[in-house]
Image 1 (tube, rainbow, N blue to C red):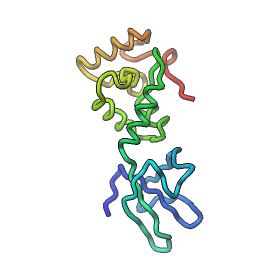
Image 2 (spheres, rainbow, N blue to C red):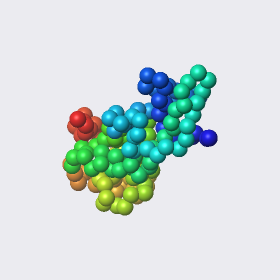
Image 3 (cartoon, one colour):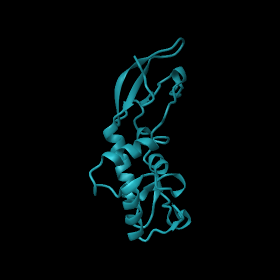
Image 4 (cartoon, rainbow, N blue to C red):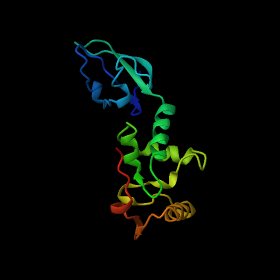
Length: 161
C-alpha cells in the first residue's frame, strides 16, 4: 500500500500509543478524540503492521470533511478581522494544511465564504493582479487598515477561542 503525505495514519498499538510508522507524521485531530477506533472524519484504507507491533488501521482524511471544517472556520472570522491560511488550518484541526486552505478558497463559489479575510502569514495578500486588488478593496470596505502592503495585524488579527 502506498501512503502519501495526505494520508493520516492512526496507529492502534497495544496500549493506544500513537507511533510514527515508517517515518510518516501522525496527526491527531480534535474530532477524533472521542472515537479513536472509528473516526467519523476518515475512511479506512488499509492495515499496517511492523515487526513486534500489533496490526494498525490506516485512515485517510476525507477532503470534504476537511474542507467543511476550513469553511466553517473562515465563516467564523468576523467582519473587519483577518486570519492567516495557517491559522485557519490549525483552528480547523488540520495544522500544517495551509496550502489546502488556499486550494479550497480557489475552488469555492464566490460569496460562499468571506475569502478576503484569509491572508498569508504576516498579513500579506498572497493573490496577484486583479484578485489582490479586489481582496484589498473588500478588506478596506470592512474597515481593515494596511501598513504598507500588509494588513495591520495589531488591530485586525482575529483571535479564535
